[in-house]
Image 1 (cartoon, rainbow, N blue to C red):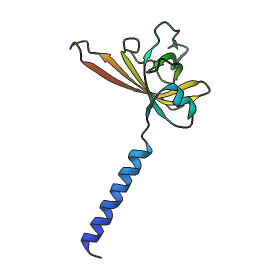
Image 2: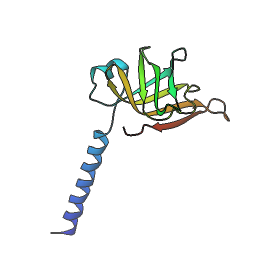
Image 3: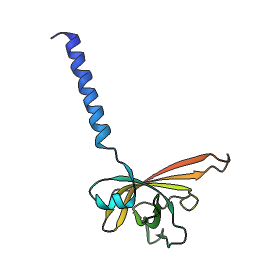
Image 4: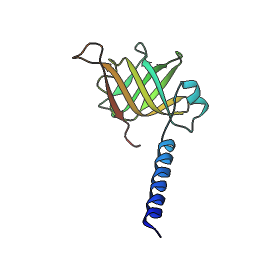
Amino acid sequence: MKPRFIIMIVLIGVAIAAIVSMYGSSSEYVTFETASANPDREFHVIGELVKDSAMQYDPIKDPNHLVFYLKDSVNAVARIVFHSPKPADLERSEKIVIVGKMNEGSFKASSILLKCPSKYNEGVIEETRHEAKES
């Protein structure tokens, strides 16, 4: 075989692998209603912490169990379960992006992305990502 033909086959294989990995791991930004209708798929949900609801976190009893309530972009509220320590700036966050799946009426978050105002620059948003531990 000619070297040009071999290189072309390798490049096509790499392109196909990149496309499959990109679409296979991507998830959409949705509301809790859409996530509830598709419990087998992973989604991103953007929302705000419901500050007047009870947050359940006891670092002595179980440091890897956090429960809080989040209001999505259409003001629907859902119970969020995160199996990892509570992010330090959760209460200060302006926006919270959670990644995960709906499971028996609760959203099981596999990661949390916090968007907090910067303490140094006014108007600048800092982002912090927190991953859940495998359970």
